[in-house]
Length: 279
Ligand code: MF3
Ligand code: CO
Figure 1 (cartoon, rainbow, N blue to C red):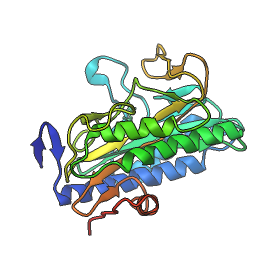
Figure 2: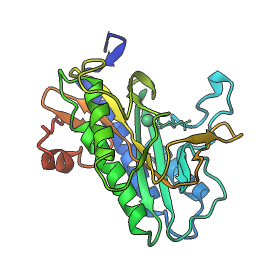
Figure 3: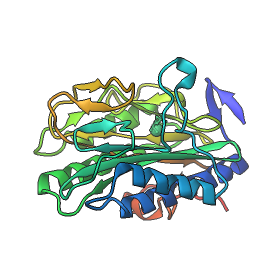
């Protein structure tokens, strides 16, 4: 691996290892999404995430996170953020109800390499407004990912996410206090990948980079508060929110979505973006 402008550049073999970490993340997320039904607790979902990590001999990059900066070490392997909680919801006794929206953010380390992704699950029957919030947040993630190509800039991702979120009749809140990031031998690495900003600005993207694109949107304002537990971030106006994230590798052939079971093939092809898995 080389460091280029402080951004970690991976070899093909390192990206293959990150793919194995990404598949653990994808599997855990799928199981947690399936278990997000009325009556389940957020703590039960976290336990499913723990079981999947253990089954694959992986470790958690979330558990204990933050200890080095003197805040409460993160106590789960997943962040489970229900309704008005935007991100970093701590799993516990909260019981999911019919109609809830729950963002599940989860990561794993395999052989020293990290994966990180988030999905939004709809609990039972949700309102059209809430279903569209999740669909539109997911769409903005793919709009941002679709800008990733060697020679493009990080600002191209940011502008595309922002434009996508703003392209709907509903005026969504775009949560600008949290960003995507580079990923590799650590979960959070350079560069920051903001969900708003100007195209043609910021670091240039090259083959061998791995980036997490992770928009967070609300049905109301983006303004938020972090609770006394040091983690839970919720909207000030109580509006509900959605969070989607994938870990994306830039290969010689195109993009490889390390945290999607199909490597992103279906979504990339639908958008005319080169699909570039490594053998
Ligand atoms: N995975 C989150 C992100 O997408 C960060 C989680 S913070 C942790 O960047 F403490 F829970 F790990
Ligand atoms: Co992330």
